[in-house]
Image (cartoon, rainbow, N blue to C red; front, side):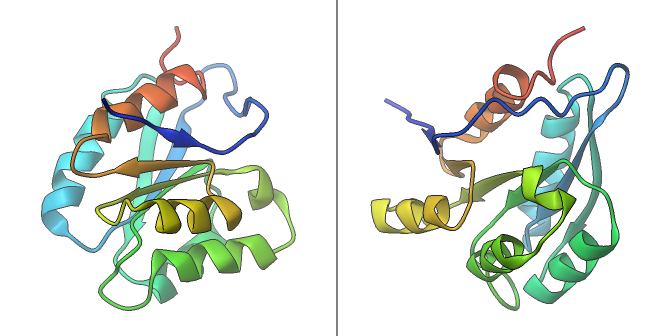
Length: 146
């Protein structure tokens, strides 16, 4: 049985009428990104606005651009997703309301609990829960509606 691990949170109501949900991906594997981007963009009202392969590039982009959802791997070419989550938790400002979704192969309970404690809204295992990620966008964030 596949289980999506979701932090206790209010329903995020970040969709504006006729507006795309802006998703930024932090993933260093081109193979995963090439699969993930079209899969995410199949969801109505979703637009992938960019990606980063390193912790430093992610922090730079996230601090300079508007985004609604972050899809974050934990092990990067340089740095970690844990570093990005920690940094986001320390930042004041509007991106505190943005949704943070971890998508990783490191799906043990200790890592999941750490990510949720650092502010991740949900945690997905790459090996079997990628479809659950798109379901989350549709169901929890309202991205699949007309």
